[in-house]
Length: 398
Length: 156
Image 1 (cartoon, rainbow over the protein chains, first blue to last red):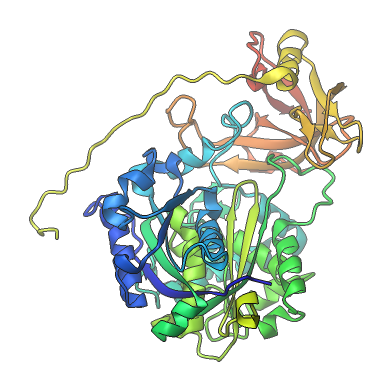
Image 2 (cartoon, chains in turn purple, orange):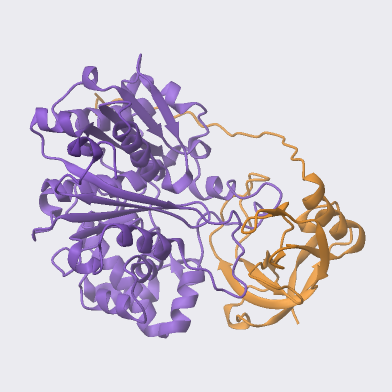
């Protein structure tokens, strides 16, 4: 049980784009922070602590939390810097949650940011590989291995159609999201031509399947329950979260027996929160989908499905915003990917859904729970469960 | 705010840092065997018996030191492969890689466990590469004590 409940009462994000040469890094962050403060109805004077996160290897700006103070308002305030690779944004949420739940701070501002156009995304990720073994071989986060495995399991035609339909659904969602980077206007009719004509990056992973390289920032305000009540704000409550790491190598593909970190995290999270039927009990899922192949494959893992149930969910349009289990009404990571912010945007979008503030991309049905995932490292997973109502806490019971 | 007529100046920079990484006695032994004897040596967990490639100081599952080495390969089976068309920069040189190239995870003969050896495959025709194919390591004539003492794997 939590010591104190933590509510998300402010969300701000920039428009994610490949063209933000109009602002420098602190200016970009400032946009998100200003929007989050406005959403929470407060100023920097109310904020007790600032948590900052991104991945230094993209922009090669060291101590970015120091250089960004001018934009993030952290001057004179306690701060922590978080940098856990792709999961950074989700870890920022976990850190802010811990800082408030523990009683250390009442109001915490967390910021995830990246300006990928100022570095080289794939070169940067390649440089993350073990310096003794792998930098010469790795190609960033690009791999066709999931596509290959899915084609083998479900046949080339069905697998390729499902992956591309997944991509089209994400784009339809992105068209409803004014903050999304890539908004193409894809339609179902385009699927055969997209399969035939999109340039490949690696194997059957094409440029359209893969996530974007974006400039963008996201800021969120976390507050203790008594603050939320005092302010009378509508909050998305942090029900629970699970972080799962995996061995630090990327070569455990031999006699494969390992459970994926996605399935492991979901089993643990659902188990301790009484979720026996995630598709019924959870209203919306913001998944960190680095590519449509992974988004499709991981749907089976996160929802603890077997066989081809995840393919059917895509083929039947169940994951669409008006479907029975909407995934990524925001358009997901394939639409917008400012990496240090990306996993935070998942939680932020889930929080907007819980609070009913997602605008045109709001899921219409009523629901109590929303799920968000982060991905990074050697297939690490962070899974965050948000609730409409405050969970039971030690503080509330005393 | 930005004036529509204002020129937006960006500052291009290229970073280049010479670096030198210590390999330690375990990885060092692995690299020495490649360089001096053209042998691929996995180290074997004394507790669970799994083989580690490249050799690692401890078994992360059993949390015990792993000091015993066993020769594996140099032949094995393609467990997975990535045929890369995208010419990304090599972080060791800063230059764009020559695409296409193929990377592969090879399950070497004699290995017990999940560890594959991750390396290059000298074939870029998708029609000629399949999972399960047998391959062998080809060593460089001049070897320096790096993973690139193996030049690549070739299909047998």
